[in-house]
Image 1 (spheres, rainbow, N blue to C red):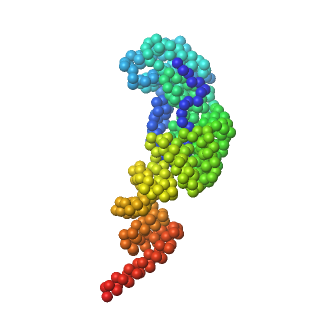
Image 2 (image 1 turned 90 degrees about the vertical axis):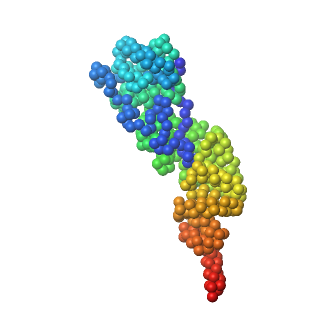
Image 3 (image 1 turned 180 degrees about the vertical axis):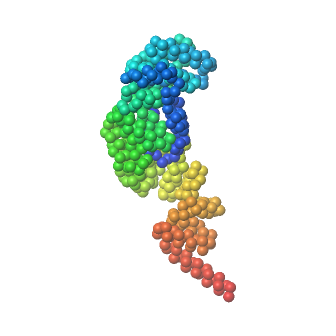
Length: 446
């Protein structure tokens, strides 16, 4: 049996990202023992219902209170869950009778215990006693989340919710784990809210976590991520700086600081952070990708190619944005054929990515391939982003190659109007060509 008191769980830190790997808001998967991001607050809260009036009266009277949630591990794999459940209930009744506690069934294989007057040590002793009883009855193991009152500014009725967060914390350590509610429990809870798109809920949890542990590096990093998502870049950088001060080897805080500079288009500063992070860990997909992206934005596509390809080698499913930047780098170094294949991969993942559609059309046109598809992609790109001058310019060139001069002129003029200055000379030359063509047609007609 392993109890994981006060230790950090093995989990990924939050990363600022645009690679498409982070779950969409509201689509976060429920981890075993974690808050269901799609559940309502009523579903998440354990509440007090189900306890006897005597239990609730004792809860109101006491100055201290302990709450425990026990869950049978791997309930689905138990051959006879009814028998296992009966054994747990008998254990709960016996131990509660001895300790003066109360219990109720919360869900299949899950039990809530209330221990009036108990402190943390008495709660952990309760769990250990329960484990011994259950071990004698069968091969089942249990995980436990413990919370006590008073803790911070929490009310008594919050104790059940805190115990559930502790149980979610225990789930990160696997079966047969026990955790007392702490700052890490709040950090994990905040991460669940964040993954569900509830930034306010996440921030509230992180703020409470810092009250419990003002020097928690993970929480400062998580706070910084939330500030970054809100566009409050100064506060984000301040949070990441605090995390890095507490732990100079925290690669995630350093990476996230670099990403904030990317958002500000401060690419040299971003690259400095990314390179610092790479000296600590050069295997993180996002770090490699963003390093490549920063190099590309600084006009160094050859170096960018190395890092983006390295990033792809670390992921089983890179997002479309990754292939988009890889294609941009290949196009910049003149490898049009490989760029076309890469943009094609990007379009399969993101069919409405106007940038990739236009670039793929341009590559096909340059290579003399798929002429009809190239024109369709070029047209679709300007439909999606009608204010992009480059896309109109590329489409105009395709029309010009097909001797559709009036349509070419229309799009050259739109491109110029959108601020794409390179279209200027083409507007003049195409107008001259159109006039010359009209003159020839008039002469032929006369």
